[in-house]
Each structure stands twice: as structure tokens, then as C-alpha cells.
Amino acid sequence: MNNLQGKTLFITGSSRGIGKAIALRAAADGANVAVVSKTAEPHPKLPGTVYSTVDEIQAAGGQGLACVTDIRHEEQLQAAVEKTVETFGGIDILVNNASAIFLAGTLDTPMKRYDLMHSVNVRGTYMTSQHCLPHLLKAGNPHILNLSPPLNMEAKWFAPHVAYTMSKFGMSMCVLGMATELKEQGVAVNALWPKTVIATAAVQNLLGGEQAIARCRTPEIMADAAYAILTSDSRQHTGNFYIDEQLLGKHGVTDFEMYAVTPGAELLPDFFV
Image (cartoon, rainbow, N blue to C red):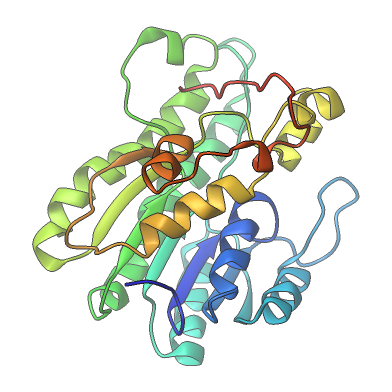
């Protein structure tokens, strides 16, 4: 499989950042993309809405569908899945990108934040996979891709922010289990994570602002890595925990400066790599 023309992608958290970049990369092939996100109205600190992303998908050559959805609520998620299938005839690819982040120690993590991260990251990923699966099983080359880290069960990844790490590793545990569960049925389940910090709204607003952004790579590196995964044979490539730079290197990419926000800058390594 060489491209995503005519394929239907269901991407959570795709009104901005990495999810949007993956959507636009698929749209360039003429793919159909369900933009599944909460953001219906412009936010003062967060660029993009489901509607503006659909406009960009259309301009890039794809077909977009706006699905205003909070993936914590099953009825909203089910409606988005049904709307996608009704509009495009099925679902070929699920990208579990939606994620909540709060980086703090145990005493400084309110249970409201703990519940949000686990509701979105773990439960949201599991539930979205569950609802999309009946349609993925009918697809020709079905993929589930979780934006989650390698399962390195070392204390150093947990100690600074136990609650956040638990929630992200929960997404990765879905990969570990579902890849084997669904292997015989031909549904690939993989994880993708960046080697360096990616320039997103979370970095801008929570993790250091413009100084941190200057030492990031753009979301396009994750989009290109996701594209390589999603165009692979689902029966041959499953159960992997990919790192963007390593994967693209195996696909012949040697110049990673094109992804740097500031060429030549010392890049910030990601939390879990």
C-alpha cells in the first residue's frame, strides 16, 4: 500500500497539533478524515477548531468531517463513529491522539486532574478503539495508532509525574494487549512517540513557552512517521512502539533539520525517551 487515497481516518484530538498534522498528511493523498475534538469555538490560547481543520483538510485535497466530541462521553463518541460511517461508508484507520497532561508530583496533583488524564488518555483510547473496531474489522488494511510512549517500566519515568505517566502507559498497554488480541483478524495496533519535544499548544502554554518551542521539532515529523505506519501492511507491522526519528531513518530520511522549529538549536529530549 503506497498511499491513503480513499481511506477513512478517525482521529481524536485533531483540531490542532500532532493530530491535525496527521490529518493534513492523509488529506494530501485524498483521504477522508473525521476530525474528532471538543473545540467548536475558537479558544484564546489554543489555535484551531474542528471546523477550521476541516477547511484545511478540504484545501489539502481530502474530505473532512467535523465531529464535535468529548471522548469522555460514550454517547458523543458513538454518535461521531456513526456519523463517520454514514458519511464515508466505514473506518479504515483510528488514531488515538487526544490526550490530557498535568505534570506534577503526587501531593500536587488534584484528583480532578488525575481523573481527567485517566478519562481521556486511558479510558478514551480504550473506548474509542472498542467503538471503531467493528468497522475496522471490515476494512482492507486496518490500523489503530496510539500516540503513546514505549513501555519502559523504570522508576525514572514515573517519579516526576506518576499520574500522567500511568495514564500514558495505559494507552501503551492497550497497544500491547490489543495487538496480540487482534493480530489474527488483521488489525494492526501500534504506538508512536517522538524522540524530541514537539511544538504544540501544551508546550506553549504549560511547558516553557517560546523558549521551549524554539528547541522543538514541528508536528510534521510525527505526521510523516504516522504516515509510514498507516501505509504499511497491517498484517505484517503490529505491536510496535515506534520512535519518530528511528522509524523515518529506516525509511531513508537523513535530514531532520527540516523538522526543527529553529534549525541548529539544541533539541529538548522527550519525557519518555
